[in-house]
Image 1 (spheres, one colour):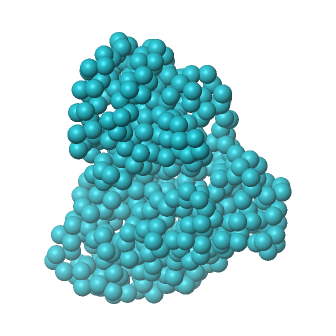
Image 2 (cartoon, helix red, strand yellow):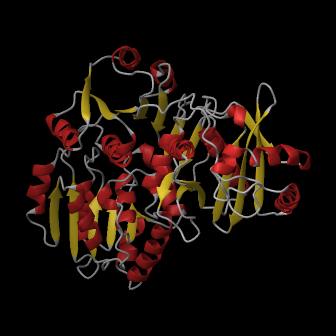
Length: 516
């Protein structure tokens, strides 16, 4: 990557001898259950995640207990390998997975409320990376990464016991199916067309009762009510018998994702459980959203949707829908929804799943000091570094001194030296120049530390540092010569995505981007 002490043009980190050849793509193992009793929310969430990160893994395996034929067909359609698990206590299941399913290099993702700390600790095989999708933070976690789609959740409410574990939370990291990740940008439809969905299974059977309440409102307020249930819904025949006598009602069962997304865009108002279905509505276009909790585990997401101005509580639906202000309120909610659902969640999830596979660094970062000038100049003028720099000319000492002094005094620059934790030897440098929401990074490793797999950890540690110090940064980018294969691999391994060339991308250069 960029030669840090070149005052004019960034260069590239020298590849060096490759003591750590690229690893083969890992397997992704997904573990969740679903059915009429518990619904399909966990399964659908993991199916969405699988679709998003598919290209990063050699194989995706879905481990599930007693998968029904419809569920197996759904997974087969998604191109996943289905591993049916024996019916046994969870403690025995964890040991079975360690012995018969998991292998070093796998990334295991758990989504379910039975996978508590004991299960997580038992299922951790050597070399297996553990990720948990969670929305209740009801027990300690032994995971390397926890993903909570609810916004407003911080690490303070979690007990993360794995060294280096991270929490990523909010709509920015919500795994949604592809059909709901496209927002036309059009104003929402009229709020007199209402969507009702209380989860695909609705185990508490609130759908018919809620539909009756909405249809009791004047036709001017609810001109058309669309009720959606999933294939696991057990009261379909009863619902159809009741619905046959209702005007202004359309019933839908087991819609495909594109069909449901299209219906959402036709409905300017929606009454939904505060679960993935609410996020799908917001992401697909949004509008006048009312949330009706149907399970205890929906507390965090329900609180976030309301606190962030994305939704209103269902008890207010009658007053709002019958008000002449319904359209204006819906437009306000839609504007807030679009701020939170920016369409970039897939990229953030891909980078998070890549980054979690990078071992924690055996170094720490400290600010560059004036006494480091001679060392940095020697690194910069290393012939291999100059060869891979966009400006191959050696940097004169006077120019280097001037550059370093200016960068250290610049409040929008961040220069960090990586120091080996054991020997205290300097390992490398990562630096950033911040301009509004964009931070441009450069890095290099000392010659004796190249080829040890340290570039990706350095990129990740530096990125975490700049985001912590400059909260306005939404995008971290780096530029590297296309021929510098070691740096290209480092960016890819760290989870940076290759971006289209930008106006300042040098000839023969590639741009990599990290999304905050």
